[in-house]
Length: 178
Image (tube, rainbow, N blue to C red; front, side, top):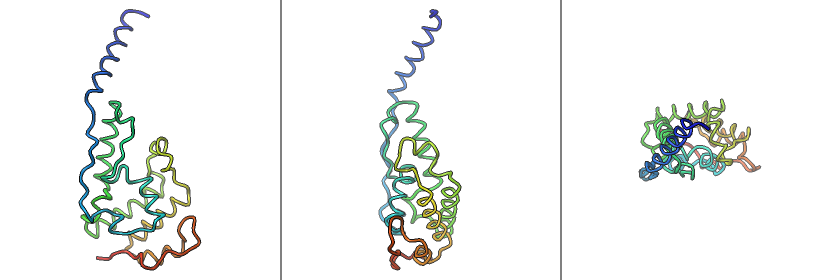
């Protein structure tokens, strides 16, 4: 190996080591009490589980940062991605959205999940619990569509029983209307 290539490689290694001193802030913002999507909307347990497994890490103030966020520049990239995701949709501040914006966010969520854009293709590679089956994807889409329409979601979900269950969804799980 030539001297020039060795110098370049040592220089790159030095830069990589120096980058490790500039870590991201992994502190989640304080979530306003009583504004979280799950608290406000009270979706069925199967929907809650899907949301927590596939959505909440990027789209809420409940992010769990994986070990590889300690490696820069990977951590910077992920932090930027999470901040952008929260700008588009933040389940932790759901109640702060007005009724029209909530309906729009629910409609967009149904589209993104239904078309396979969410969760992002790379996310389930390191988060296997976020791999949505066709049944789970359909469940979320149905649920978000009903939420977007402002319809009595319990009626719509009785047509499709909760995942892994033969019981209908209880009637008390209606959507709040404004």
